[in-house]
Amino acid sequence: MKKNFIFETLLIIFLGSLTSLSLPPYNFFFINFFTFSIFFIFLFQRLKQEIKKFFYYGWLFGFSYFFSSLYWITISLSFDQNFHFLIPISLILIPAFLSLFYAICAAIFHLYKPKNILSAFFLFSLLFGLTEFIRGIILTGFPWNLIVYSFSEVSGFLSILSIIGTYSLNLMVISFFTAPALLIFRKSKKEVVVCIFLLLLPITFFSYGEFLKKNFYNSEKKELPFAIRVIGANITLDRYYKNINAESVINELISISSPIEEKKTFFVWPEGIIPNTYEDQLDLYNDIFEKYFSKNHLIGLGIKSRKNVDNDYNYYNSFSIFDSKLNLIDSYNKIKLVPFGEFVPIENILNKFGLKTITNNIGSFDKGVERQIIKIKDDLKQLNFLPLICYEIIYSGNLTKDFDFDFILNISEDGWFGKSIGPKQHFIHSKFRAVENGKYIIRSSNNGMAAIINPLGYIENKIDYGVSGYIDLEGIRDFKPTLFSKYGNYIFFTLILLYIVLTFSFNRVKNE
Image 1 (tube, helix red, strand yellow):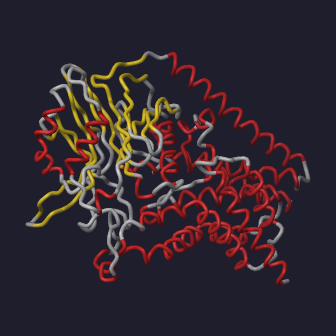
Image 2: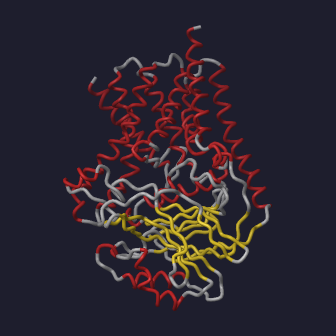
């Protein structure tokens, strides 16, 4: 008995760890046909065991999966010595917590005790798909490393996101990966029919992708009132910890930007790029900006801002736009903040234990009030875009109710995760948001990847990790608002209802 338990434990750890190789930057998605099918068979054959064992199996699979794919989060704790003691704790605690979702999933699977393979198949997919959605919204949400991200390099397959969205496709790919188990346990034509149907769906998705691609590239290109110059930088995080002069960082960014006086250009710099400077202090460097930028230029950058409220300051992580004389044109304050990175939950209590935010020394940032389209007028033309700061790009759903914008602008600082797989995983979310919303994504990053991604999810231009430089976007092709951008995750809930019906329907077959 003890030998069996040890073997089962090692098997589950192996399956969870192997599954992590399907994610970016490896993208060996075919691994999941093996790992998910075996894990499903493993659970289905042990339905007579105690529920606590199922809880353990689910937790262990989740822990090995998240431990292997999210270890890099602890790198953000290595920059400040005050956080070093948290590294081993967070290395275990974060995957241990996220694994609880899979543990509950496996326990519910046991409680229902499906009576045949088809009912078990749909229940397994349903529970894991729904669990991934809940993980993405509860406690501010952490929808990182969904199983569907294993297809992040298969752009033609991802076109269906424009209709059903990430969570719906995530549910369906869990079914794809588990389908081989149906063939192994088939007892009638029903299992074969379901497998054939699941195999036809990807073909349908690719066909739809080709249809969209053809229409997209046959459409006319619209010239933008400003060339968008996206900056990718490789400026060290030492600027926060070693009091590096803000002026030297500004000069380096200007050098990378290579402004041309007569060319109308909107320069996009990364998140929080200028150290020890607030939005209302940037005019201290007015002489530098006036020397290199002209009336034809606008500069958008991530910067801390503050607002005086009752003789005290509220602080924000902001994206602000200035003209060449550093007059503020517009700004956006980040709404989705990173727990412990930008704010501390129940701060008054946790501060007493020495816990504070990782990315700044001012305490928690305040949330912005509303996400609005930024509109920049130039003569008779107007440039409209939706700003998202760093972490905000990872959320799938209704980003805004106003679809009248040209592109999504995302700025990020990925240096907190060092030379790990973290920045590459972060980047992939941009592809999914582009397809879901049918909009170009312009991404400027420091210590990460900057890119221009079109509404089909194809990368039109990119500055790779560890490289400084710029890329320009001067025109875009029109793309109508997608079905998903209008209805969001209502489509996912419809699919969940369908899986519930199939689970119960097939479970009655045997009884009859």
